[in-house]
Length: 359
Image (cartoon, rainbow, N blue to C red; front, side, top):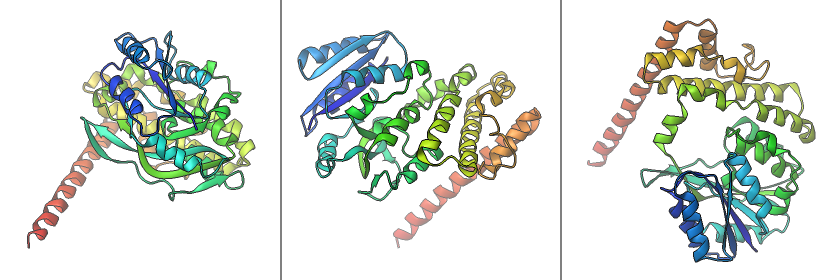
């Protein structure tokens, strides 16, 4: 079994070598590594070329103009020759037994077209806990029971990441979606690119094993929540694409649509929260409040009667809609105080537990 490891690369010179080495050092060596340099302005392109020269026939590099993450991944898919494709973001890295573990599962059942796996967080060069277990280890779905997967995909972020999916390459290549229209849209792109493969897969399997290391870059997160970037977070195009799939999934009913609207409403209000809390100046907070957040919401998703929407987010939306600036300030001050109290309680519980262990 041959794997294609697809790595989109853009201005990641600080982390790229670690990413590439984690692939090269795999305990299972039947793979090709495809590095797609999406118009990097730093030294990333040269690093890609250096490794391709060291490993001819093993590592392949594509240099292209910058068009965004979706474009880079689609280019990688077109070039892939492996039976299965694995996605790795260039500032992350994988466990050395990832391919060996995947091959073990896939060799047991020739009808598995997608294998989902878990990951752990990595911050400041240290592992920082695992992502929660989503399903029972070893669970397999086919076309008779995939509704559970569809619901998990569209109502939560538990299985949206493309980098925790090993997908049969032929399924990826058969995807009829016109992704060109989405170039440059880099929000919810993993969810968008998961819709067709999950639908087309004959069988989908899940392992709770942590095979991927997701790097948390606090500086990058901070930069992404500047007020001028709000409009770039628009994901209505993904919402509309999901609506197209509901009929194919046999899930096109009012309750599901209401849950889907609630998911988008909650996500947008969470985003508003992050922007407001991340604002360091009063002027920035004013920009966050003055932005027309309705432009990021699908029609009807701000319906106050939707019982699936978060109650606190409904309250925040109401305050924003009336432009109650002072009330919004109090809302976030209260939220901050609650978080501090919660943190203190956690520390106190830990201190009490440690004290009792000494007796």
